[in-house]
Length: 446
Image (cartoon, rainbow, N blue to C red; front, side, top):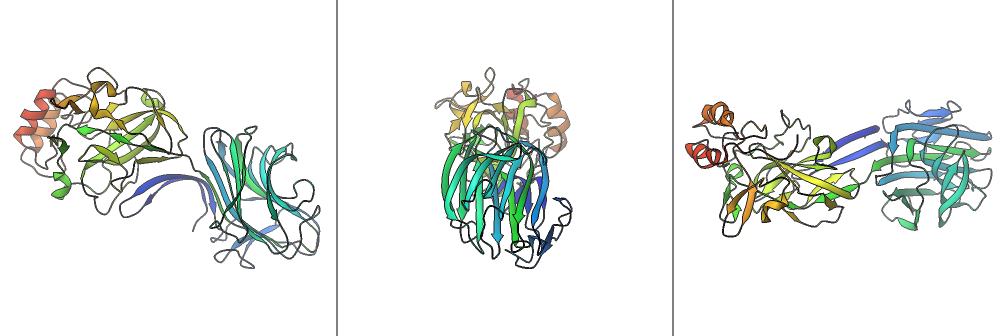
């Protein structure tokens, strides 16, 4: 395990992938705390002595002395106003009973390390109740207790602590009195949005001779736990037949295992990849969230699957497309495909972890612009993304035929000139698809 600072990554399973934003993750197994700042110096070490999990924990290094020790690590100037933040860590003390002179706390988010404004959780920030509590700090003073637990911190306690703050400023404190996070007990929730700057994470320990050297921290995680799920349906014109789409690309082994939207004009660096395809997958599709119609307002992008029934799914083939690090709100949803014209929701859609289906296929007015889709079923009035844009420049032009279809005709595989997605570049791609859409363009700004 490694120390990770402000790293957005994609967790890859056999058939499922999701993005996650982690600002700090440290289990101290690498033995390195050079990026942590100590006041005074050399009061903390990474040690195997009494390690909480694994081989190493962060441990107070002094003995037979009194004083105060502090350690912090910078975050990336996070503004938590529109995020759902989560802090997790294990905290352990030795054979001393906390009191007014033996006390400790963890700074969840503070704006600086001298005149501290922010929030901390711990024991006896003010007074000596010995209860695990969440406090607001102003000018380095614990001036407002927000939440407190019934847990009376005593000798030799190992406690798993989880604190969350949602985008409305509602805090929740949970703890596991046996350590780790498998039996968390909630101390309730409270709203406090007085401070929103998360520039540092850290810890303070005040001690007497009998307590010095007997405080450990481990399994630190600070992450943006915001998540919205997008349930959306949209058809591609090319493979549409009757009431669904064919899955020939996957069936015949032409569909690629890694998302194909890395090259220009998509320039998407997502690491979505699978080892096999769920049933019913037609092709990869790109999903964007925007706060306005302008492409500059794009806040998130994912590669996903379009299924034969038109459902756009995450990589398991059935879940809504999940976006981590995105707060609840209203967003324009954009669908982009490698040789079909992009479409965008006509209006912003309210998104959260809960889902309500948005179906592009039911009417032209579901998509932004004037008649931006093709009616593929005139009896049931089903609409789809128009095909024929081989170079993905947002326009169906002669270049798509001359520079792409013409040079690929007769070839099989995952080809941009295969406008009906049957794995073959043939005359019907030009005559039955490209020709009928010639001159059309997307209404989605890029």
